[in-house]
Every structure is written in C-alpha cells, then in structure tokens.
Length: 219
Image (cartoon, rainbow, N blue to C red; front, side, top):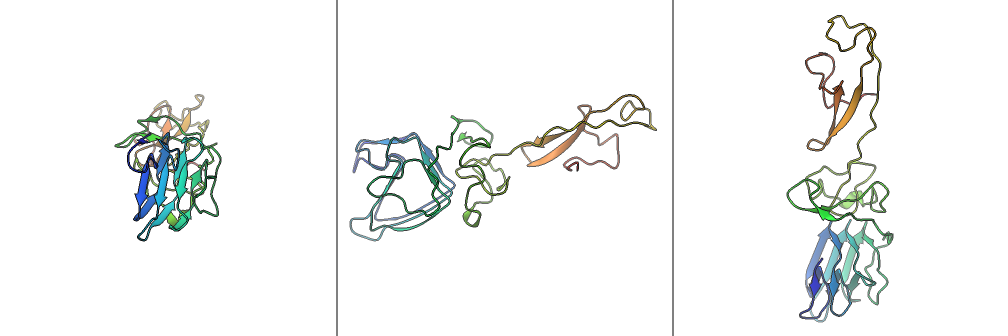
C-alpha cells in the first residue's frame, strides 16, 4: 500500500486531477493519505474535464474512506468492490459490493508479479461484470474460471475433487487395471494450462491406455 503526503494529500494508490482514469480488474489494499480522503482512490475535477471508468476493481483495507470522486467527474463504473464507499463523494456504481473480500497477503501466487489471492468464500468470487472483463488475470490465468469473473487482479482456480475408481481385468498384466488391485484415478488442476490432468496410481496414463488423454475431464 502507498501513502499520499504531497500535493492534495489524497489518493494513496491512485490520484487523478482533471484527467481520464480507467481501472479494470485492479486490486488496491492498505493505502493511506495524509488527509484521509480517498485513501485508495481520489479523482478530482476543479477545472478541465475529468472522468472515471472503473470495472471489476477492489479497493479495500484503506481505513474509513477507500475512495473519493468529485461530483463533477463523469463516471462509468460496473462490477466493483469498495469496502468503505460512504464518504462525501462516493464512487457511483449501482451494483457495488461493500463486503470485505478477505484478501490474502501480497505474495507470489504464480505469474510475473505478486498478487493478493481470494478464496471461494470471498465476496469478490465470481461477482465481476462479464461484459467488461479482461481475458486473463494479472498472472495470465484465463478468465472466467467459474460462473463469472472474479473482481480484482486475481482469478481463483478451484481444483476439482479427486475421484477414486476401481478397475479390473487388465489384459496387459501391467499392474494397472489388474483383476484384484483397485487403481486410483484422480484429477489434478494444471495451473499453467488451466485444464485438468488425469493421473492413474500417481502417473499420467499416456503409456498405459491409448483411449485416455490428459487434460480431459472424467464424467
């Protein structure tokens, strides 16, 4: 999180004055300002035209005033989550979510830069605006992974449950699919491809069954 101390003393993460600001799938958390005004985001208009376009963005963990947008600013916002948006000049978003998203620590969750992860119980999970979603998250994970895109920079991939299948009558006598030995099949999410790999007794089955291919769902 950043701290704004110079200039207007507001907008600890983003400060915009008389400009055009666009934010899509951004996560801002833990920012402060010396004036406690728009600790995460402050957009002002005191002369020229000023606009804010914000979609699927999280602003949280910034005290009691996460965002401030002057009344004269032209706004077009959807699918956002701002925990404290009750200041004098709140963000205009008819579908705004204000429940704490339960962000994880800023850390390496894969990809080129640190991110703040969410869980499947987060208020940001699957709640983004699909019409204004990006194709991938900050790590390069394809969106959406669920019924809708997640709000913020992180898209959660929920691994499927493991499934155990007993098989018998192996004509190749290769100790997989043997008569009296139950074999364990399970699905594992491939975080690089976003697909699911099938494993048999801990191994990929490519050399065991011609009819089974990895990256295929068992149904």
